[in-house]
Image 1 (cartoon, rainbow, N blue to C red):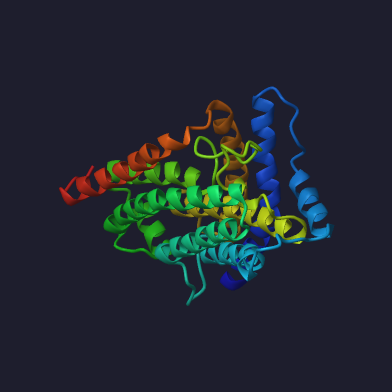
Image 2 (tube, rainbow, N blue to C red):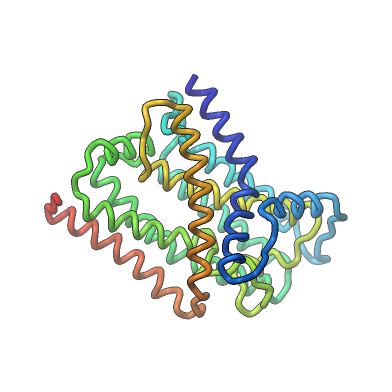
Length: 304
């Protein structure tokens, strides 16, 4: 039964990823006084680009062609790694460190694709993606170190079980969750770090690496972008959200939580403006600092 529920959950999240992206974009537009796109528009955008002719830059190599597929494959493995229903079959790879390695792999190939396109803005986007990665990874590891110190595990299910049933060390737990939430906005390329709606080349980060893509390559990259959003929100709820005794109830609640989070993300983005690029290191350093503070409190014996 656990195998079946996990597979159903993965299929649901794969199918609903463009919808969750559309919900966040629509809510953000409405909060800004615009009509905005339909919540299902991303499905049509991906389908339309899939049908278009695919061309590649003249001087690009196999890296440019492989990068979208490798990024999508890495993010699909990330989603498979997440125990969507709160339980996993035995054995099942569900370790946070493995998951963050896959995210780094996706970021690495995104940067390579930007460089391989031999375009000015592609190189600019690759440089920015790589620079942000050097700030994202320490902050993620600091938050994971706190969760490991509290639970004694880096595997997702045992870690979440300890947090759900032994809510001691509340202050470090809250600090770690805040650090993780802040840094995931950078990982997902959302405001205030990046704006997925912008078409101003000088301010783009992730979007700049996709400027040379079209056709099926662009469709794959767009689907990977929506999948990353859904997978990371789902991971957050698996770790920090409620744990119900029923697998099916857990799965239903996960889908509802991701939808509510997409609404909340749209609302949050309507309240913030994009930070200047040179302010982002301080933003990521603050997130890492919060995680380090939480670990220091734990190491000092804080039991609140």
